View 1 (cartoon, rainbow, N blue to C red):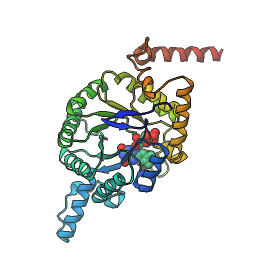
View 2 (cartoon, protein in one colour):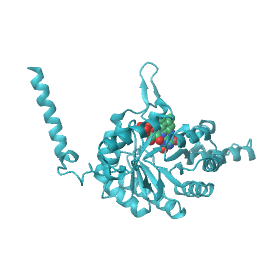
View 3 (cartoon, protein in one colour):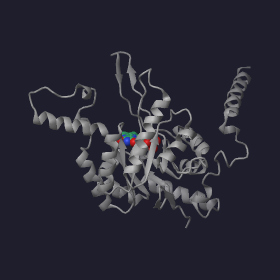
View 4 (spheres, rainbow, N blue to C red):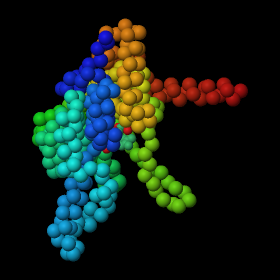
Length: 338
Ligand SMILES: Cc1cc2nc3c(=O)[nH]c(=O)nc-3n(C[C@H](O)[C@H](O)[C@H](O)COP(=O)(O)O)c2cc1C
């Protein structure tokens, strides 16, 4: 049988398919089904640091009802009821998930200040999380904020979490960093054991009739995989930690591409929402079939074979490809026009 096992963040996993953070894993029954279908680990839905602030505000409100003394700075946040799980409920969910399955359970933390992150990360570790994924979604909306300052703040946050917990920490990154190789090398110095490429950016849409700005959430398509492959292929060999790919992984071919680019694991969410949790088993069967057919004894043999450092011609990954792609397109267009 082809060997699909891999090591991710120091954990021995029985395969490359990890379930990325999704509300599907809020049900213990679903987590069991994910394990049965062949998922090698599960990242729980994120706990938002802002929840802590809201929960303590709710407590303050209870304690000093009528004094009208609550921080206005919290007013822009969603209501407490908008979050699906309370902070205590989240920790209990980690404990239950740990008891229910053998595969590693990774907690996911989405926050912005070092105080909140360190406290929550420690609690997640104590509750039994095997690893922690830090979701670093932050948006620059102030013209005085420099990219260097944002990166520095991020590095300080990661460093404070990594030194506070013993379990491995991976950082789920946004795609919009200018020099990803440099940032990743600094994340490595800060203690991160892996990077997760990439957070999906949920841009709001406009309703031009009601003049409203509305949140949107669409499931991914495999075309979203391409920027992830590109960056994984560039980072592979430069970043010593592990690379996880999330975004556009739907089939065995996508998993293979993710690994060939240099990814250790391929994470899935949209495909499971679309086809059901059992889809993992089908993808693994297709993956085994392909590896057998091409006479690979293990998936590990394919890792990084299409990374920037492995291919003889690196131009597809560099600026040359941009020029070549654009000029070949205009040539084709011109030929068709005549
Ligand atoms: C309904 C839904 C909820 C999600 N919730 C979270 C979350 O709480 N934290 C997080 O880091 N990512 C969250 N994600 C992003 C996924 O973990 C994943 O990175 C993204 O969907 C890309 O993978 P995909 O193409 O397989 O869907 C969510 C995605 C979906 C579709």
